[in-house]
Each structure stands twice: as C-alpha cells, then as structure tokens.
Length: 393
Image (cartoon, rainbow, N blue to C red; front, top):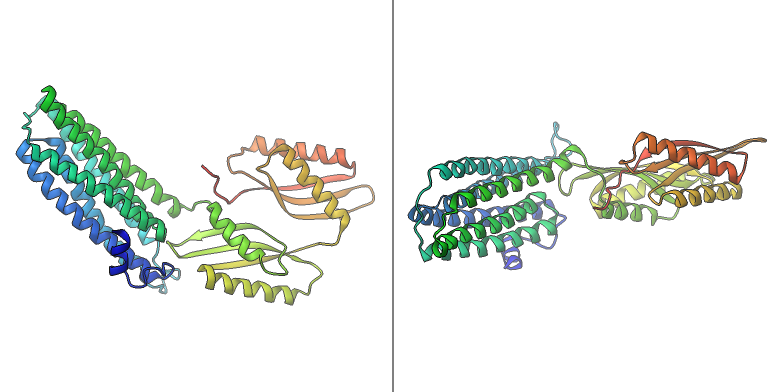
C-alpha cells in the first residue's frame, strides 16, 4: 500500500534527493495521517460516550491530537521547502524540526489533560457499559495505527525525515495504548472489575512519554549533533577517492534541515606537490561533493610529508602505542621536528567526548612515557581534541 500511494501521488517518487519530491512525500504522509486519525477520533468518541469509557475517549482525543499534528506537519513541510533568501541563506529546512518539536508539545499536553481526567475518575468512577462494537472499533483502530506507523516509518527512512519517524513512533505508542484500553473493557466484561481509570492513567503516561521522545529526537539536530558514522564514512571515502588526497580528518557537518547540509574537512595533500595543483584538486572535490552528495563542503588543505622514513617510523610507533592503550584513540596532523638531542613529535590526539580531563591527561602522560622508552629523544607535543563522530549506541 505504501509503494502504491507513493507511485500514484508523488511525482518522480524515486528521486528522493530532489526537495520537491521530499515535500511531496511529506504532504502525502500528512494527508494520510489526517484522514486516518480524524476517522479514528470520530469512531472512538462516539463509542466512548456510548459506553461511558474515559480510556476510550482519551484514546480518541489522542487520535485527534495526532490529526492536529499532521496538519502542523503539512504546514511545516510546505514552509521547509521555501528557497533560500537574504535572511536565510541556507534555506528553511530546519522548519521541519521546529514543527516536530511543536507536535511533541501537543502530544504531551494531551497526555497531561487525560492524566488529570483519569485521576479524577478514580475517586468518582463511572459505570462502564460493555458493547461488542467497542472492542471491534478498537481492534480496527489497532490495525489502522499499526499500518500508519509502518507507513510513516518506511517513508521516513526513505527520505530521512525526523517528522515522519516521530509520527511512526507515536503511532506505535497508540497501538500499545489502544490495546490496553481493549484489555480494560474485557476485564470489566469477564471479571466485573472497573480498571478503566487506571488504564487511562497508563495511556496518558505512554502518550506523554511519546511526546518527550519526539522532543528529544528533534532537539538533537537543532542543538547540533555529532556526525553519524555512515555519513562520516560516505564523505571521507568520497574525498579520499581522489588522486592527490592521502587522508582526511576533522570532518564537521552542520545540518540545516533534511537534505541541506554544510560541512568542512581537512584533507592531507603531499607537501612536495605544487600548491596550485592541489588547490585545483580540492576545488574539483568540492564541486563534485555538492553535485553527487548534495553537501556544501569546504576543504582545508594539510600538507604532509610522504617520503620521510624517520617520520613514518615515529608515526607507526605512536599509532601502535595508542592501539595498545585504547582502540578509540587516533591521531592526525603528525609532524616531526628533528634536533640533535631531541625529536619533537607534534600531532593532534582525538579522544571520545566522554573522556574527562583526568583521563585525557593520563593518556597523554602514558603515551609520552612509552614513546620516550622507544627512543629517549622523542618528546610528544600533543593537542587533544574531541571526536566529531557519533558513538554507536
């Protein structure tokens, strides 16, 4: 069904790098979400009022909030597609994240409202009325929400949309809460115990937790997050594939919305090659990255020595010692200043961001000591910096 809708309502649906196609996917997801959630709200509100079930009504209003979220997402997707202007030279792509954040607040507000209502019903419970149609409607709701969650997840992964992935997570949360509501009705029918208010509290808590999760996921790109490992590998492999580039480091990616990124990276080039030749290669890489990957990349050239055997030997020793100490450590910008009685090894040491000041100091001291044992003339001049790559969870 997902591919059927994409083929019939998204022009050039396979060309997901085009912003117009991304927008069309966002519009499709929003319209489908509005239709499904309004339909579910109407059914649950009628059935909940008829059976006097606060959990069913709460679940229905949760669907209504989801419909409102889809409307906001629709507006946000349209605004995010606005081209760059004088005040926003990088476009309006981050509007998608802002919209997702607004959606999260709406979800949390709905959860709080029905948490209060459910708590109130504990002291003043209302008698439930069992109707088989209630269970049927709720079972259909579970099916619709399950499909909607898978629909948004598939589209969200296809175009890398946090709004759609958030909608998918919300729908899967609804599957759980509606299933809990069904359980409360069946318990009342067969055990005569009214747990409706308690289930309503559980539903409210799950809804609020989903809202918090959406907020967390959308705040990360707004605040600035580490480079995902797959993105890091894709960009560095692309740059290093060019003849004349012997390594890269310090890749930083700035996200201005899905499909809108700027990045900077240091590229190592041979110091014996004419600077104009290396500069021409760098210019070509920057143009090709924009064309092939859709990223505005700025490359800083770092000249390196490739034919100094003494430097190569010293660098191998440093890398070997670091590997023995901690596989998470790496170096770059390795230089050597050779003197009569002292050889300075100058380099940047990259450590995980989680390492505190004491641990970093300990690593440097241990490395200096070990390198001094390799050659008494070695003196390490170390600049410690954080890794910009996201750690695998």
